[in-house]
Figure 1 (cartoon, helix red, strand yellow):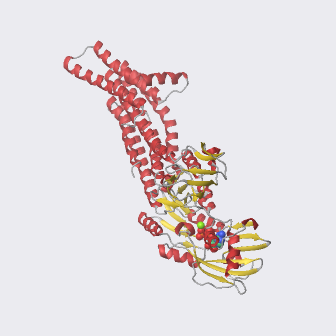
Figure 2 (tube, helix red, strand yellow):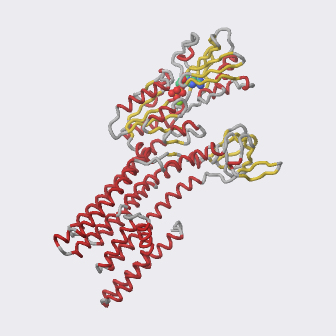
Figure 3 (cartoon, rainbow, N blue to C red):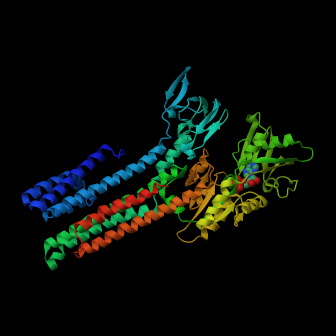
Length: 618
Ligand code: ADP
Ligand code: MG
């Protein structure tokens, strides 16, 4: 209750007073049989207290040409009931309508707050040295290359590299992971994480707009534009539904008496009809369910870019995985170096490292570590051939490194490496320099996700640019039968197209990748999920759902959440439309009264909202 805003508390008070007056009326009336004067006195007071704002809004909207909104419906219905002498019913309709409204605003506030908690990652200031004094400035005033100081307990305002200091970071607000990570000089840090132990000096590498925090916030804000099919259906539905219902009510009130007489009877039925007709239960509960689920997912480090993706993920038929960096750690180690005759190991590693200097492929990192480049300014002409390898020029020499398919189009590759995990071939101009055998580890969570998918009855496939033997090994370990290897990015697209073409109607195909060399497939799948993309802009942009850390098993959680949300939405739609139709039919033939109408309107709305609250609890 402490979460109620001031206006919500005030409305609660109004509801309570009106209810007490209503109770007072019923008690006094049963004891003393009140006369009309007292009845009107008590019930008009209750009516005005509970409904003054609704009446006012309805009047104002008439002058603005906004007829047929819920204020109007409620005003007509209650004023009509008053005119027919159903005073207590009129008050009850108004009071319970207000109860529904209060519920609704509480529910919206609750989901806003869970998004706001996410917004809490937003840094308010950055500390920079200005003429030797430390000053707090707005994060967007800091330039790339500036040194910022982050004290213990403060949020890191911009992405950067640690220049001085060692500390622990709490990255839970951006990854959803509660473990803290240890960082020291030279490590990259992301905005939004919290510095736990000691003072850090950080060299800023990205402006505020390009920093991780801004990217995440942008995502969350955009989420509301990507509406799910169900939401669009509800919007379209209530647009045609309300006028039709009002038309029906008019027909009941005006046309039926012409044939059957009993004007006040038909007017009463028409009013009941109007009360039932309010579509608020649907209008609120459907987007609320999605909103709640998106909030719940983001608290676990899963960013869903809109409710349409949520709805689609819940209908997954096949999940397709990229291998390197997604199912495997992407943390390569060098198993062996095999220089060609007349080449030494250092020269081989140096050539490879110069090529990889500007690459962010997982293979690049291990090679760069093995042979750090001292004069990177000498590197030019860097080119990345996605799914094949890279090229760079160093002191006039053209170096290339990559897989066999790529290098063998320039030189004859020596060394048949049988059964090796992954092999990087290297050449200089037209000379073969040798090959580097690298191996990668399968993530422990990868097994889990394949087991979960089988349990859910979802099929799986692996697409990879890597060689057949290493792809087959991974597939065997994980128990996946559909593996397609040695694919260039365009082959990945056509393979995915085949998979999409074979899906059943109303189901979806999900692609899970790391955004390196697979942005087109991420975008092409019904749902693209990017993994471990903290700091990788390409993936954040191309994907529909972003898992902020490397934990691939979170996909199971996301899937269950989406399925549950879809189910709750379906329940709400069926329940609300069903009850309303039923009560409307009964009203038209005279078998329902104002109290049933109140339940069909407010009761259904409250129940639907309560049902969608279940999306919060996961
Ligand atoms: P995956 O589909 O498994 O994620 P990629 O499409 O990223 O793999 O790459 C496919 C293959 O191309 C890799 O297995 C590797 O042999 C080669 N390759 C791609 N980029 C590089 C690079 N920067 N350095 C070395 N080899 C590379
Ligand atoms: Mg990859």
